Image 1 (tube, chains in turn brown, blue):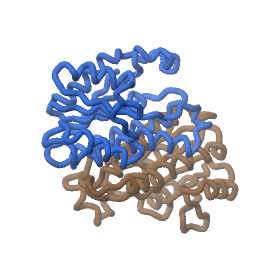
Image 2 (image 1 turned 30 degrees about the horizontal axis):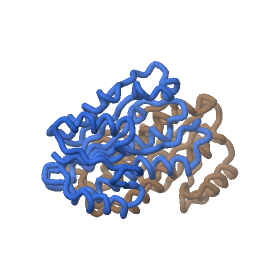
Image 3 (image 1 turned 135 degrees about the vertical axis):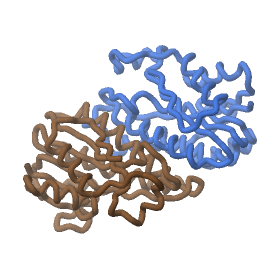
Image 4 (image 1 turned 180 degrees about the vertical axis):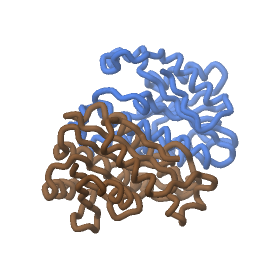
Length: 197
Length: 197
């Protein structure tokens, strides 16, 4: 398969690329890759697909959300998380649907904060919850048997700087999360949230 | 208790008001009530709380989201649903937290589309999913034992115009949903999604 990974230079994107390169042609894109894309800019997404052509799977490992105590989160903060993590990935699906082969797939990335809270995580929870319900809904309406799932990991074992904010939470190695992307790309399910706790 | 209901003139707001008036002082607000408020305008929320003073419970039954086939939903459509249904209610919580008594509560309104899809419902699913994860997260951070829950009903029995879009879904009478607001206001739980299917 021809697999496009957006956000390929992050921990998750690299893990997805490593896991998928064994059997597939992987094309890497990000704000700073050879193939550049900024999901906040629909024209940039269109240019990326013009460059790479039709693909069999699109993986997105993108999205930044501000972390602040609830009382300090402004409407601008919530909006920033929505724009970057939610609408960026929604744009990728909406524009990408014309560039994915019949029976192809999208795999987005949400996260544990959709289902469990941490201090300073309200904007991230909101964004992840939005994504997971979107995936469920979009799965039912995408054309040509195109599938869509989300990978929703707990904090990464390698992301040591974040561990103190996830006290007692399981930690998952990026390699394990990488296999969840393989499951979504090579599997037959749609509308699923692959939760890695 | 002194209970402020925003969106009091809709089907759900009226049902909440009827159920709560039996034992509580109910203050009704909406875009067109004596006490006017537009949740998209933070200053309007601040003026409302200056007018009504401290309350023991805030209920929100607001939020409009565009319904269109997935392929026709634009970024503007998603943003419109987020602004109106999600950020409006988030604004109400963020500004209202200073105007709710110790141990008081917020009760927001999401909906069945957070957990089950319908054709044309992707923007609504996204908005409702965002709200439900926000409620879970905010519950853990609100100060002074302030609680927050969401009421998440299936299609209303009275909303006959919507029934064809919810084939085979349960329908719930507004009166039943009204009791869920009572449960949230008078109960002791927080971070709960009261799903009425």
